[in-house]
Length: 72
Image 1 (cartoon, rainbow, N blue to C red):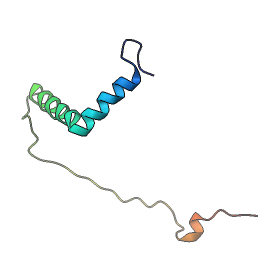
Image 2: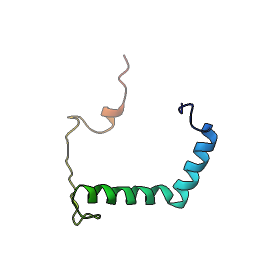
Image 3: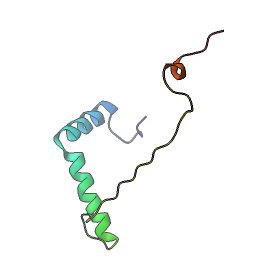
């Protein structure tokens, strides 16, 4: 499902896989992220990170009964 102006999918996938395995994609992402941050007036690397978590009650019923299909 690649646009017609790109090479055959096998060639595209071959290079994608090579670059993913050797770290090229990660390096490109790091460089572009830094440039976008600098363009918006911030430091290239973040000075802090924020993590958030939330617990959500999903069911009133637990244990094996919740996982079993009721047969009639």
